[in-house]
Length: 284
Image (cartoon, rainbow, N blue to C red; front, side):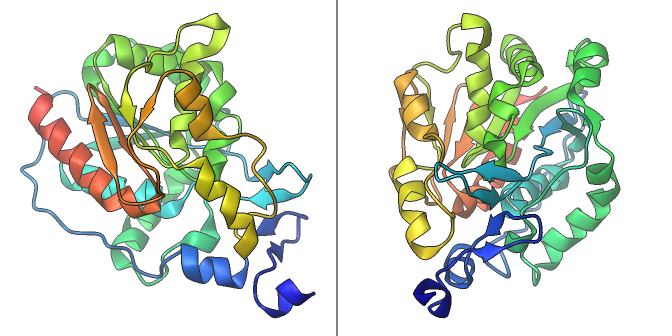
């Protein structure tokens, strides 16, 4: 009751899940992002497509049994996509089974016209995405058309994605064909799919920016999460040989070979610029 009075109690949703408290929303989200419009020289090559893999799941079960109302973080998805679109790239939107993309709408920057514009433009495709299985079956033969795979963050990226065999096949395909892989915050959970079927972790020895478990462990105190996370992403990646370059959930970005990563929602704009400039430079 005291937490509720102080605005620290997570908000109970109609489906029984919990979204962040009033204080957590104030501290952890923004009405307007730090998006910087950059005048890129438009990409005109053949590798103009970027596959964007979204989660279709919403509720993440915490250690205490409560469910966190999550999904894809809108800023972490849409800011990088804004930069990539402005640089001349186009998107293929996909979810594991073709169900609609789920966003953390409580984190949507309602006063950001740029984010709202690309969201509204792509909304029909978010509502009717491609199945990953269909992509694996029909599109992986068209390697010359793709420049990158992008997996946005949001705690929802830890729902289903790290165990999805098709995500693993796609990341293997991207790795083998020298496509770029772009991801941030909790999105690097997708990289764990390269260990499925007892395969060696592709990204052993890679530098990467990832949302720290130490921050996730503290957020229940302000009601951002309704309990402790079911497992720790950054520690799991470290145990497999990843070299994490950040200790805070900040604006850190990192590029190592063809992997481009960011630490948190605060890195979304920087990640978009880094990804756009890198793809423009490296893709022929």
